[in-house]
Length: 428
Ligand code: HEM
Image (cartoon, rainbow, N blue to C red):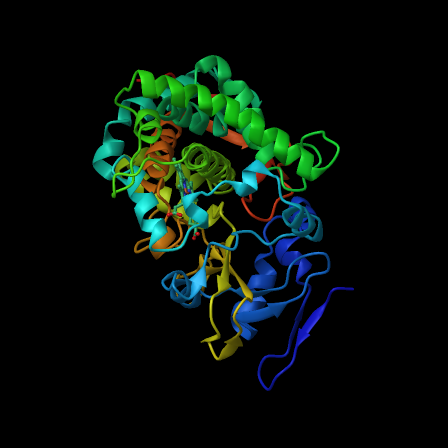
């Protein structure tokens, strides 16, 4: 039994730490909000030793997560961002996995991190993203149109996964013909332990190697094309990128940039959209409110990110002995910043368990905080805004056509299937 009891004058609390990180538990019951509520109240920085996984401090309060994320010189991303299970730890020691050998900005610390982030940050500014308005709006319109006037579907299959795919494929130069294959690959990349999605292979290490190779072949073709024929898109910017000192990006770093943009952008937006739809089915008044007041759509998008928090946590590693909320954290110890818990923190949010599209202010940490704040936040917001507006202005009826299921993943979390019945007005 992997129960950990933390003793101390005021910190006695028993939780099962597997509830926080074991993918199959998320697959069965979704995010462990009851455990986080206990931890926030009784042991906000809590030592966990889940059987079969790395040990870590679970950080569950909004203020503590901001404190950790705001000190990248003390709490590093460079030692990995997910809590590994024993098999992954062993595979890392083995080496030879192209996905692990690659350096992406999310696993860099300053000062290197800032140099590499600058490579693409110009593209992701609000002004840069405004130029994509047409792409996001036409993707949202076409996908909702394709549903027809009424019927039943799996919302994830038909809309939530296709919308970010179309947007990312466009900015990264992926051909329409390759979209389906890329979708399959990215699902396998983030499958975690979900046996329904996992790639069939001899072992997880083998599967990761094969995936890395397939992505590499695909992106390498685009990189070569954009070097020969640069255009005004992110694909060309990355293919021809120079660091501020004038040094070109190495091949693994260029590939890493493609992969991080694609992988960080796809499943997160998909899960936010599917979680949003489920929230709208559960709270039809909130969808009607946005329909009647389209100016609320931006506010609704922030509430959707808070409510769904698709990036459940990020790991940090202490680079020195330090202290957090009175706890001694030793050099080399890991911390998990549970963004999903911060986004229900009673000290920050009024009635945190209420889905409220008018919530303001909404200081959620769904896009992280400080050094590694989501590079794609403006794009994610624009994509979600387009779809929320499209749905809110056209949906007449929306209800479950079966029970939704959860993905067995504790890192990027959310629904796996979402069967719905709908009636939709034609676009005006
Ligand atoms: C609803 C959708 C999204 C959510 C909830 C989300 C969430 C996050 C979070 C929490 C982080 C911070 C990681 C940390 O603390 O270490 C992050 C980083 C990042 N995100 Fe997003 N993201 C979303 C969409 C996107 C999109 C659409 C893109 C790209 C097109 C993107 C690209 C990135 C990148 C490149 C980073 C790493 C930034 C860095 O290390 O400096 N994300 N995201």
